[in-house]
Image (cartoon, rainbow, N blue to C red; front, side, top):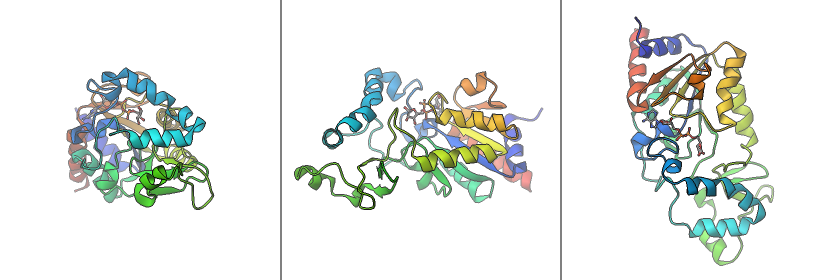
Amino acid sequence: MESLITKAARHLAESSYAIALTGAGMSTESGIPDFRGPQGVWTKNPEAERRAYLGWQRFQADPKGWWEERLAASTSALGNLVERQPNAGHYALAELEKMGIIKCLVTQNVDGLHEKAGQQHLMEYHGSFAKLRCIECNARFRRDAFDLQDLLQKGQLPPICPSCGGIIKSDGVGFGEPIPSDVAQGSLEEAWKCDMMLICGTSAVVYPFANLPRVARQRGIATIVEVNAEPTPLTHEGISDFIIQGKTGEVLPAIVEEVKRLRQ
Ligand code: APR
C-alpha cells in the first residue's frame, strides 16, 4: 500500500502545474501562534478576534484615528515577527518551486516567512506585516518608506499615496476588507489552471481564500492534497482528495525527499 507521502509526491512529480496554498499552521514551528489551533490567538482570546472584526470599519470611518491607535499599540497579536525565521516546511515549498514543480504559492500568512525562505512566485493573500498599501491603486511600500512617527507628530496621518493621492494603510487585510484586486484575480486564475493543489497548515474556514480549493475542485482536473494537523471542512466535504495529518515542518520535507527519489 503506497504511503500518503509517496502518493502526494507522485502527484507532484507527475503534475504540470502545481500550486500551494498555506495558512498559519505553516509558521507555528517558527514560534508564531496560529489563530484557531489549540494554542491559537483567537482560541485563547476571543475578544481579540471580535476586535479584529471591527478593524476595517474603524479604518474607513477614521483613518487618522486608526493610525494613531495602531502606532500607539505595543506589538501585534502575533508577537514580534521581524525576528522569526522560516522552518523546514517553508524551505520544502521553496525547494519544490526551485525543482520547477510549484509554480505559485498563495499564502494567508502576513509573516513574510515564505519570502525569507526564498519563495519567488508568491501571493500574499492577506498582505504582509512588513508592507503598507494604497487602498486606491494597490501600490505597496516597505513600512520604512514613510516616517510614520514624524507624520504622527505633525498630525499628518494617514500617509498619502505619492502615485494616486489615495489613503495608505497597513498591507494586512482586515476582516471584511476587500482582498486587493491584483491578488484576488491572480489567485483565482492559479486555482483554476492548476492540476495539483497542496494545501498546508490552514483550517480553511476564512473566505474568500477558502473558496480557492473549491474553484479547483469545480474545474475538475486537480488533485487536491491537504497537509494539516487536523481535518478541515475541505476534508469533510470531499473537496480534498486526501489529507496527510501531521506537522508541515515534518511532512513537507518528507514529500520533497520522496519526489527526489521518484525522479531518480
Ligand atoms: N503543522 C500542520 N498543521 C498545523 C500546524 C503544524 N505545525 N500548526 C497548526 N496547524 C493547523 C491547525 O490545527 C489549524 O487547522 O493549521 C491550521 C491553522 O488554522 P488557523 O489558525 O485558522 O489559521 P488560518 O487557516 O491561516 O487562518 C486564516 O484567519 O484570522 C484570519 O487573517 C487570519 O490569515 C488568517 C485566516
